[in-house]
Amino acid sequence: MARHRVVLRGGTVLTMDPHLGNLPRGDVLIEDGVIAAVAPDLSVDEAETVDVTGHIVAPGMIDTHRHTWQTQLRALCADWTLADYLFGIRLGVSPAYLAEDVHLGNHLGALDALNSGVTTILDFSHCNNTPEHADAAITGLRDAGIRAVFGYGFFESNPLQPPHFTDHALRLADFRRVADTHFPSRDALLTLGVALTEYGTLPFDTTRAEIAAARERDALIVTHTGCVWSLPSGVREFAAAGLLGPDQVHVHCNTLTDEEWRLLADHGAKLSISVETELNMGMGRPAFAAARRHGIKPTLSCDIVSLNTGDLFTQTRMGLAFQRWADTENLNLAGADPTTVTITAQEALAWTTVNAAEAIGLDHRIGSLTPGKQADIIVTGGPGMSQHPHLDPAGTLVFQTTPADVRHVLVAGRFAKRDGRLTGTDLPALLARADASAETVLGRLADAGRPLPGTPPEGWGLIARMSAELQATPEHQQPGK
Picture 1 (cartoon, one colour):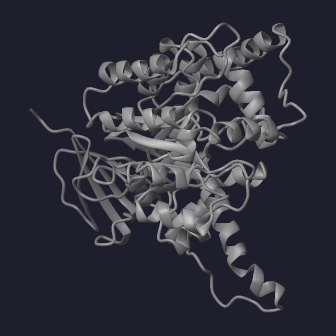
Picture 2: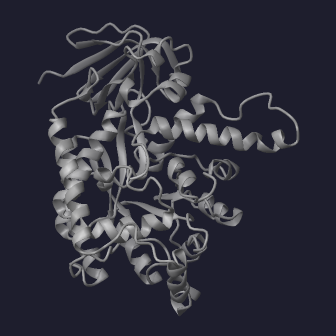
Picture 3: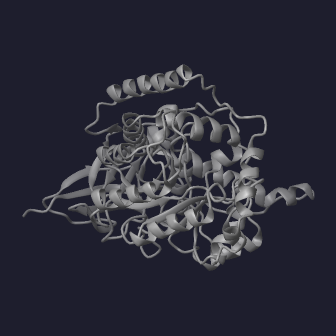
């Protein structure tokens, strides 16, 4: 059978591979969806040639935590706190979503990611109100053609109708059904994960059961950790119970103590930072400095387009700017000035490429333009004023590039975006459906008399009291038993 070969010719190549380095001008050969060669001037016969002269060729970006189902809620949370998000989205809008809304959110959200050069997402899917919701979420990702880890969420959002899952064991059983039905191979574009219910909101035995279910199926584990200052993070409890491990991505981690950071580092756990969410919702400083102190590699996530942008260029730019400021704040307050930057643009690119690939357990397949890896590639440039000239390619990607500058996006060698346009997609029709879905979902809430965000005066105090009551039980006092 003839091989399908494509060569990207003449671009500035940022490989993110320390052995290959950056090529001021180079070619990338793709054979049957795999990177076959990267060199300054490849001699290639019988291949489709794509001239990318004057463009930047880089690994596809990887988002390590995105609630993709919320795509049609874009900017709803613009002026909300984190408590508003909990009560308004998690306990408000989520119950009003039907399976068809979840499918649309995941389909359009994955396309939104691809359009901006994000070729892989860790989908923290916590709107699984019924088995049909979970199936729809997976199908939405698959229909978009993105690479993704589907993190099956066990969270119960108290649907407007009586809950489908009347017992948590039924949710665990549905996870196993999803694993058996949709994830027969670890080599497919979609792989399996588990999104834990937040620590302290359920009995600890339930948390333990969720982690056990994930590990039975060798599923990646993702969890919100240390993002609410009035609640415990759960890191010590996880460690005492022998539950921490390198198969976990801990999201946010703003509230962690040095002891808790040491526990994460000692167990090889990974970190996802959602810069926009954390700064806008008052969650604390993004944890770049703490991660650096403890040898944990940062990764980035867009989190929620119900608040944030859906592109990682923005997250990288904000994250780098924040940490450069934080690193020099005390120096400035002492009346002095920095003599060098503390993090380079090239280092920041690792947050969404090689670091992220390692965090989600796919560094053997993606994250760098290394021959033998999957051809998940972005090409940026084109006619935009911000793209000319690109004197510092890494700096151009971090500081100058937007989704509009993404010319080509390939996932496993297939063009998901070409010449600035998504392929195989009737985008106007999808956007019209998203507008209608948002109106319908919010209409269901209005009909039910449910205001948004609907945060009670006690706010997090209500959750903190419930969590404290759970922690007073014997199983929380002796989590390792």
